[in-house]
Length: 383
Ligand SMILES: Cc1ncc(COP(=O)(O)O)c(C=O)c1O
Image (tube, rainbow, N blue to C red):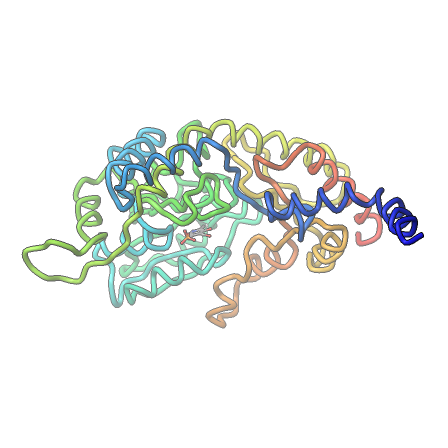
């Protein structure tokens, strides 16, 4: 009798077994999938990364060594600069470039307001003055006309992010005669007039944070054609075994990270192709709506696919979350808000109305379709 009851209970719950097992395994093998059905961003990693990292671990040389050197050579070759210095993050890369350029107290550095606070931090590390510029609403990048208005005799550099993977107007920015530091944190493989960004200014920085175009978990790199600059940065990156003391840093990358980076770099072109395929799905789906879509630029790698509404993006982000799709404001808060400065109306509007959709190489076509159908169903309600 008791066994009969147990069998009955078993038969009742049997249809749910597969669902439970699937959820359990997705959770353990693929943690991002369980709590959020479609995350806003995630890395694309595979067995190749595991193999390369295992090799480094088995070698016993896990700190900065020959893999880091290889990664520097390979990225410089890919972008087309004469050299590179790897480091621990994109922020560290920015800090090292500013130090290497002797930028310090009283110097002004122009940065866009519409960007993450890493730029503000790096300028503050060297006690220079951050001068914020407006954004170009067509392409989300620093507005060259506003940069020109803000140039003074104390301007020592302009930091120009190629935001969301879209090339900034380097020709105009360089024409002002002030050194331009390209921020390629979101733009590995982005092209400007057919040329890779990262080799178009005085120096360029890259970030390899977990969800960037290619990743090492955390990591960064400086690229430049200036041998002097790279030598200074190489010296500042580490402190050990020096004849004389001056302030230096521990901003090194490890060979474990570089092994992952080398593997990711080999996949860069496939990654970009996948990003463009997802972007095409979104373009086709949203063309008919009254929205601002990203520029259809041949050099854009769609690190982010950012659409702009005619009103606050917040409610749409919340509605998508309820459907299990994580969207976000692509810049958490513009810098003029942190610094409590008024007078950035374009940046304000772009920030308030923009929403970034999930886009990454491991996003499947089915997931992209799900984003598309969820969003189009909401447009009817929220437009
Ligand atoms: C445009 C831009 N610059 C710099 C950084 C800083 O990079 P990291 O997080 O590696 O310090 C980021 C990171 O999000 C970024 O998006």
